[in-house]
Image (tube, rainbow, N blue to C red; front, top):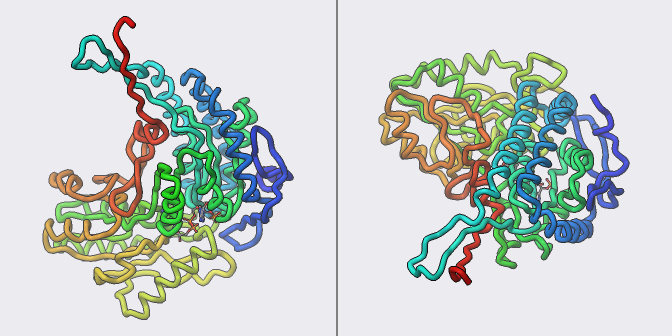
Length: 483
Ligand code: NDP
């Protein structure tokens, strides 16, 4: 483990240099043991103003760079992450409790995202000034894509580096400058973006990083120089971000919660369905906005699927980073563990049918919770309706495809969904209210696909060309021909 990532003197990346943090201490914990990893000095809310001023100063020249030149910096971020892959994998395991394979997927995802947006940036100049035919032949029109300005990026702790890449790469590609506030729980990994920025000679002010807690995030939402806020996290905080932005009529992108369904149709391959269902709720210990936490299974195969899931869970290795066989780690924070345990207590109190788990693992120290499954969960129960953000699966049986669809769509959220089934699976996928649907596939997210939700799951889309569009404004120019 490269201790340099855990023991920095200077923790605030401001206007192209590392400076001392003068705000509250940011404590990082190893969730596998509960022991302290490091304490770093956070930024102050006042630093938001300094970082925003730097982002404003840098914006003019950054936006005017050829987009292909900006692409070279994005490729630099990809290369910088790749060069540190082993260190970052170790850090994700240590600070997030991720099993190795999951930590590796995270770094690969962040690298692929920077590479993808570098490629998109390389095509951006050629797409500028597209001609629009106008009804008046003495006039001609053209379309340009302009960066929205300096942007505030606020990210959570469940996929550090990754959610940041999903915002930072398209923002920089579009020509925006950015100020990033990582989660206070997973700061050390995110600070690596500052190291790479220095290494690749990113112009000062194009990226600043302010480690801090909610007070720093809140200060970002009221800072006048930002022209957009992009936020990923809980609906409760997302509402606060949106309310602050509304005061200034500021655009927001919000990637919020989910209570995503997985529908297993009667002609599904049962073994495949069990594997996909387990990954959909136990990957990252269920701390995924896209976790398929509501399983709706066709009556005809329900007994087989439920029995298979029980066997699967019984064989799962739940362990910390010290165990190379770990399939599921601890929850990332003590608060998250407590929140999940409250739901499990409620389930016990309400007499839900618990097929597996239902408690903490009993292991001393770490933030472990058993992979938990409840069957025949009432549709008005919090276990069925609310985002738990933990390894808790709620199951219901459906007598028909229509009933399965009704159950799937009966949610305030609409982020993601999975369908496992035969030839009608794609048709069912088309009828589910979700921004991203997997059919007979585990939850793989490619950087060129849209990410974001319907209903209360958020506003806007990340990734793909839509991710770039989130940081660009469309400008139309009408000119007199020959003038
Ligand atoms: P939050 O939504 O509170 O945090 C997300 C980010 O917003 C963090 O960087 C946080 O800072 C920051 N923040 C906190 N308060 C404000 C504010 N007033 N204005 C602007 N930014 C702010 O998530 P939590 O970490 O507190 O987790 C709470 C719950 O949210 C979890 O139990 C889970 O259910 C859900 N969640 C959902 C996620 C998703 O992707 N859908 C991701 C993470 C959590 P800091 O954390 O440093 O205080």
